[in-house]
Length: 261
Ligand SMILES: Cc1cc2nc3c(=O)[nH]c(=O)nc-3n(C[C@H](O)[C@H](O)[C@H](O)COP(=O)(O)OP(=O)(O)OC[C@H]3O[C@@H](n4cnc5c(N)ncnc54)[C@H](O)[C@@H]3O)c2cc1C
Image (cartoon, rainbow, N blue to C red):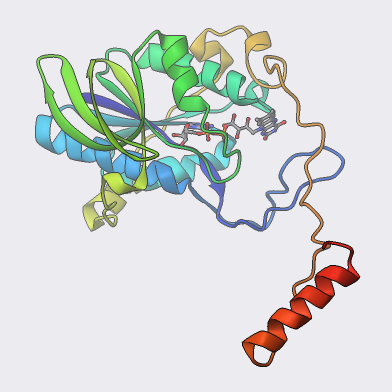
């Protein structure tokens, strides 16, 4: 069973700062981590290999430092990593990101399953998984929290929906996104850490993927971030003290003062 896991390196903080000129993330001085949802994708890939054999390949599109995330994935049990990095990939929106990843997936064929996280900490759109499936003309199942069975070129999975679960069956190959309820990621093993240090991580660019530079990066993006900002908090809380009747009187008085009742 050959599994490809897509992982993204993201800033390891929610306190991200935005460059007001370029509207891109200021990455200097910020520790980067594997997108937390992608650690569940890696773990699921490794568990599938342990059950069915085959290999787990991790791929990431990003700057050169994303190689560290791929090495970490190898320390967690992945067999090999491929970094998709090229100046032409910079500034990609989700469409161009998915386009680049789908070209890499075509180069990695044959595989049985592509596993993505449900969303990222930074971009947070949850669009890449479904877009990949669409571009690769593969079946897609989102929010998977259990892979129940894989046999005869098919899989049966359980996915989370708002008010419960759905059990779905699909042909393979397919693309899924996973939620954190699917497993508990393991810690890196000593053997894994040693392997990750010596692993060679190929870097694929525009030429390796045989992709038109106008279809990737900023040139291939249909959307632009025009402005990013944190909403101003101009509301203030007030805590009323005393017994409950006094508190209610105070609240009603305050609402009247502000013309709200
Ligand atoms: C309109 C728009 C414009 C943008 N412009 C810029 C820009 O100018 N500069 C910039 O730096 N960023 C930009 N971004 C951010 C960048 O495009 C996204 O981070 C990227 O497309 C992935 O989207 P996401 O983070 O929402 O991933 P999601 O769709 O939330 O990710 C779901 C899953 O897909 C996989 N995945 C996502 N991204 C990758 C990846 N790179 N490699 C491997 N697997 C991945 C992971 O498994 C992940 O868990 C922009 C985003 C948008 C929406």
